Amino acid sequence: MLSPLHSLLYPAPHPATEIWAPPRPPNRSSHSPLRPPPSRSVARAAPTLSAAATAVTSPPLPKKKVLVPIAMGTEEMEAVILAGVLRRAGADVTLASVEDGLEVEAFCGSRIVADTHIAACADQVFDLVALPGGMPGSVRLRDSEILQRITVTQAEEKRLYGAICAAPAVVLMPWGLHKRRKGDLPTFRAVESNVQVSGELTTSRGPGTTFQFALSFVAQMFGPQAAEDMERTLMTQLDDDLERSTEVNELAWPLDHNPRVLIPIANGSEEMEVITLVDILRRAKINVVLASVEKSKNIIGSQRMKIVADKCIMSASDSKYDLIILPGGPAGAERLHRCRTLKKLLKEQKQAGRMYGGVCSSPKILQQQGLLGDKAVTAHPAIVNELTCKVIDQSKVVIDGNLITGKGLGTVVDLSLAIIRKFCGHGRAKGVANGIVFEYPKS
Image 1 (cartoon, rainbow, N blue to C red):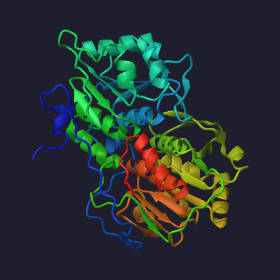
Image 2 (image 1 turned 120 degrees about the vertical axis):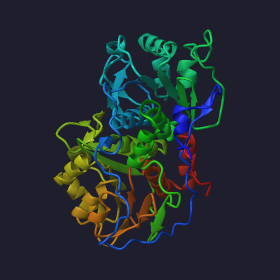
Image 3 (image 1 turned 90 degrees about the vertical axis):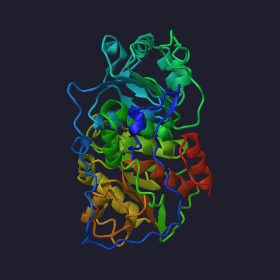
């Protein structure tokens, strides 16, 4: 039987070919068995938390070159997930600003610093040009004459290019890349699949389909096995019997004000987790503060992307928060653990009965600070044997009273939506999920 990713490299001969997309598991009841503390036997090796080079076949030299242009108003989830997944796969990814400066403020307020200006890319040859969406970011990409020349040349020379969300209509169509030119370029046609491949062109629907979009490029550039390995590393396709969310010791999170959430970050934090949390929570009108525990507000994430925090942790510590949520990334989590100000905030958070949590590797930090006790959690498979509390393996998200944890990178959207549901109700969570094109249960 062919691999489900086989069609990425060998598509059927149609103008637009539906790409393989991982099935979403159904939303089952919230009763998952608790796994007792160690010892634990593991039947197969768990994904590692290190760079995916350990899990993905090394790409051939020279490295595949990828251009991801960004602008003021670019959709940050789309840009950061594209760059993060492709860098993990071994590609040489350039984030290029079409603005006068390198720092851009993205659609939901995240500030990202590009690697270079688009002018520096004008004479380079790329294996892939991938355009994120977002408004007015897509308009600003469209108005870049240098980016237009790069992308049109990319299409005419039959190298890979793609666009997601608003970018296919707002950017590619005005450039004429939706029309056939002497039979060389693909035509557009509207379809309902999350990812479409048409010749060298790949398109996708929105922020909630960006992982699938990025993995399609991994398959096209490095082969289906590399994409399947990357899926396991990212945990974007987990077992079908995995619960979306499990809640034990159910507790309401009642508020008489707009929720305030603190996300502390450090050098080495997993930027895809950080940006996804910020993006989705802000879409629900939750007040999110991104706080650096470093001396500077400028952070370099685990995949070498530069993010500018809203505040330093000392400044952020003057306020109280309804939730403090820690991102993963082993190096970043360790730096969070060493921050005395954050330790004090987390201790006060638990003592006051306010909400706190973490994703991926960060539950280990919560344990080291004595914040888990007899709570039930989920965490990245690479660290669960280091946890002494109860672990629920069969759930992407676990909520135990005022504690919320997420399994890993590929489950951060579910984690973000679970936070929205607890604070704001199912209706708002469903509305946000629909807005980012992410499947979410009706009830």
